[in-house]
Length: 267
Image (cartoon, rainbow, N blue to C red; front, side, top):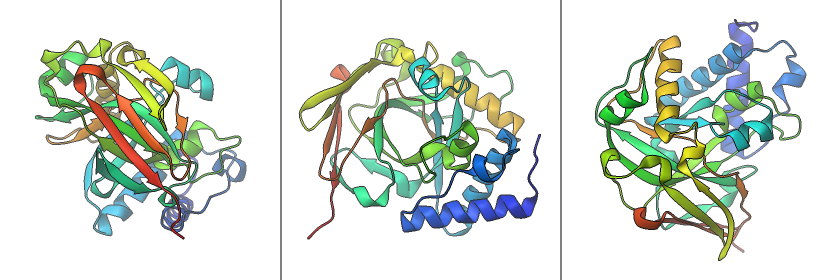
């Protein structure tokens, strides 16, 4: 159920697009539009995505957020959310990334599913996901919040493309049948110190479960996951704050490593 009219939704989408390019913050939407609903926020995100495509950005997939119990408890939100990934958000391991490109920068440990076939809901299951997946690859998600952090709700987060800033993939792409995905684990380092660790089963019991949830959610919005899409399946650690100059390094054991350095302002 939506409450906001098209003009308001467009205005919010424009405001968020400006914040993304200028690195500024937008005041809380829920404070300004008290009756704003989840449907409204997906409408904002969808409008922001369409604007990006019209401006020449190429969509390459989706991210799923708030999948783990630890994240749901931390935010008070009981359902996952999703956002869009554009090609210009994707980095390879070893990248040097400009910290100032993002706001409130954090990273999370995830698995990315690269699809060979489309997945359409409703009724999609983890078996549909595993059948449709060509590779699973280690990835770090870069979170970037363009809306004030204090007092944020799910409505703010979804409008803000589910806080998607970018992603770094690396390590070894594996077929989902080659590894027990639930037991993929990772150690997350910031400047040689382990800050977080986790196991992929923290994501809804199985990392493919988030992808099935997403396929079913997209069906309700009249769309589907396509062949070739990359889906960031949700974090199995808490977000780790990153400062300018930091190096992040995630060790996935047999699946290899993902690393990136966040560059501060050059003198």
